Image 1 (tube, one colour):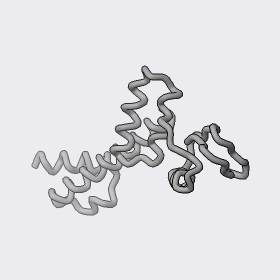
Image 2: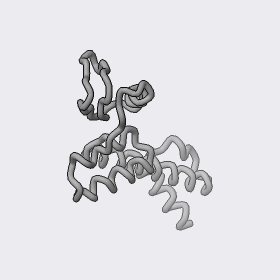
Image 3: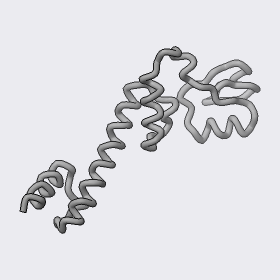
Length: 122
């Protein structure tokens, strides 16, 4: 976020031109609605050639990772991995339910994968 007016953020007064990084969505929205800040593209500061980071951010946003536009590479990868694991587990649970595997929604992904494989071989 780039401050365009005078605003108090986390107990400190900010003046026009100051930049804030890693601002929570709700706070950022309130600063913008109060017309004392504008959202800036954080990729500008990180280099034009960082296509991988931009792709990670887009993937993270698609998966619903919170604050994806403001996270660094490591946190983006972590968030993406968590969301993909959640999706995989959900797919396995649905498949197990279709196959009639008991307690499908109470088992982990590895257990479900083994039970699904066994059920499909029958």
